[in-house]
Image (spheres, one colour):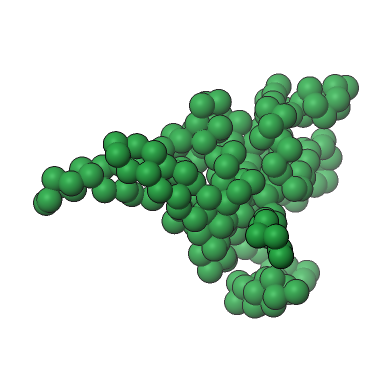
Amino acid sequence: MDDGMKIRGDVNICLMGDPGVAKSQLLKHISTIAPRAVYTSGKGSSGVGLTAAVLKDPHTGELVLEGGSLVLADMGICCIDEFDKMDDTDRTAIHEVMEQQTISIAKAGITTTLNARTSILAAANPAYGRYNPYKSPVENINLPAALLSRFDLMFLLLDRADIDKDRSLAEHITHVHRFNSHPDLEFEALSPEFLRSYVSMAKKY
């Protein structure tokens, strides 16, 4: 803006839903379609691994800065699975990234700011393992308010009991495992190239 203030242009999205609704598969597929994307699991990621770490160069012995997943996903998308399994101390490390899109480092005499202009797509399970429709969304979503407010969109994926849909889903999965390809579809699936072009064109407006 004219006064120097910057407005974040990337959207942060959280997928909250029951186990078995293909949240992880969706994240992995998006990480392959996006021109620049990084996929990571929150259960096996630390705050340092997501932001940046100070390491000693094996050849020179000097301290160097190595960017984490959010830095590598600059100008792209970072897919974080099992977001609810992360430690609170590790989750607070991405607060600055989700709002300011920068990572401030002050470690071992190294003081700098790294760009992390990335969209965050996170997948998480509800607080009780499955979404409880008899409780409010606030009780079901087991995330701090400070972190929840940084998500622009939140989608709720529910596994509703439906014998016909469950049977068709089971038949689809067994067909893929038997023949290593999906069954004949009643529609034409969009190609990754088309999706990349569509998103690239949409980001221009």
